[in-house]
Amino acid sequence: MPFELPKLPYEYSALEPHIDARTMEIHHSKHHQAYVTNLNNALAGTPGEHLSIEEICKNISKYPAPVRNNGGGHFNHSMFWTILGPATGGEPEGDLLAAINSTFTSFSEFKAQFAAAAATRFGSGWAWLLVKDGKLAISSTPNQDNPLMDVAEVKGTPILGIDVWEHAYYLHYQNRRPDYVTAIWNVINWAEVAKRFAAAK
Ligand code: MN
Figure 1 (spheres, protein in one colour):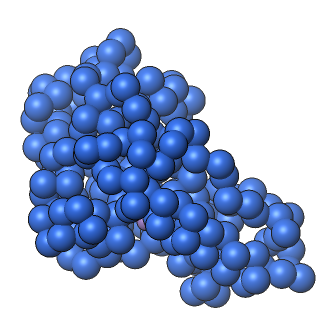
Figure 2: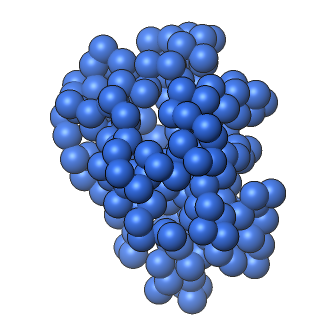
């Protein structure tokens, strides 16, 4: 099977109290595993099973819906685990902070715009910070779509993605998506986001 569930780089409880251990366990071992299993099943015996998930996303309009949904789910969650972490939060530094300040005027204004994108995405989806034509931008996508996809409204390289599906927060936050988004700033791994920013520019 070409695609595999990546190991979570920290314990399920590592993001407590902001993201609870039970949510992390179900999210990683059940939801993400299901995207991987269903993606492998959907691609079995096709040329797609020899491609990277990034290549598949970039040409997603050529694939059937199960590849779009589960391939997006696999890419998005693989990134999501890495941009979170224990002993993180705070503010970005260096080039990334400078780019945030010049694009959004300040880090707090960036957070406000990002939170608005997350809050106004109706139903299930993701909020993104991405690099588009060398510049930072905020967007959101429905379902498991992402900015790499040729079908995305705003296309580019995602460097930070926040899952706003109810499965990402409902056990602890119930219907309070904005509270979840406020809390998640405490566990953002800005060093990883900065690494992705440098690679995307
Ligand atoms: Mn999810």
